[in-house]
Image 1 (cartoon, rainbow, N blue to C red):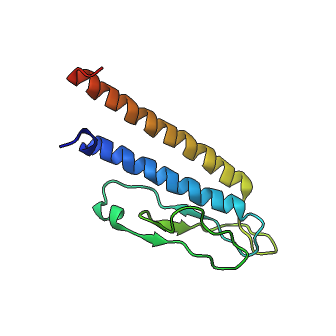
Image 2 (cartoon, helix red, strand yellow):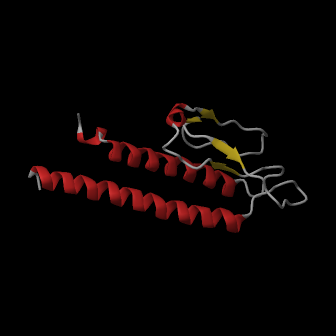
Image 3 (cartoon, helix red, strand yellow):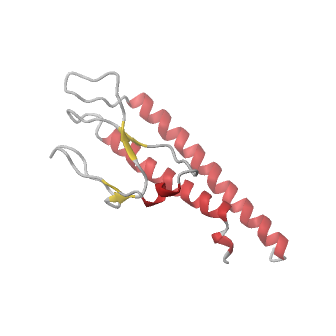
Length: 132
């Protein structure tokens, strides 16, 4: 068994991939903040007690010619969800930039916490086996 196959590292890697995918969706929300009839999207919270979640595949598609397309891969293994926006502009756009920027900042902090935990855990294992 490789060190990176340990459950802790596997969950941290999944968490980091989830944060990367969420960052991509949040940036698309910000980029489409002036697109008419655009509804913001976010990822469903990651839950490790559901083993089938890693098997879920969600494809992104442009629903209107004016929408920006995705910059990365066209599919995700995480569940996407449309947010029930409570307010929208007369053009039908429901993106609230303040909320999106708060989510971006929180997502970045959570990603940094996961990467720090991952590297420190690897450091502890290296120390334990005498490679440090």
